[in-house]
Length: 89
Image (cartoon, rainbow, N blue to C red; front, side, top):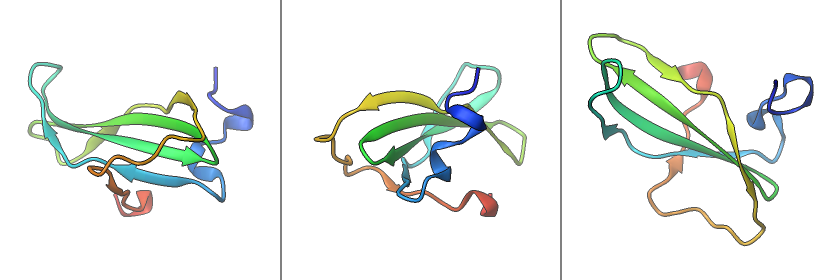
């Protein structure tokens, strides 16, 4: 089942503001050696997903978006940076 209607992604909305954490080390899951968290805010709706780095591979794996709620008072944490353009990945 799609997260949003018509297979839209949170990043498809004009007011989408996406940010990402720095890479963090990770051990023990299917050869993964690191991950970072992507967060997208659309108006006051928040979404998140994980990007995984695999040992010995020159590519990453992106999980699907998870809806993390509606909160008009939530603000960005300092450790989130502007997300890279997905077409550059």
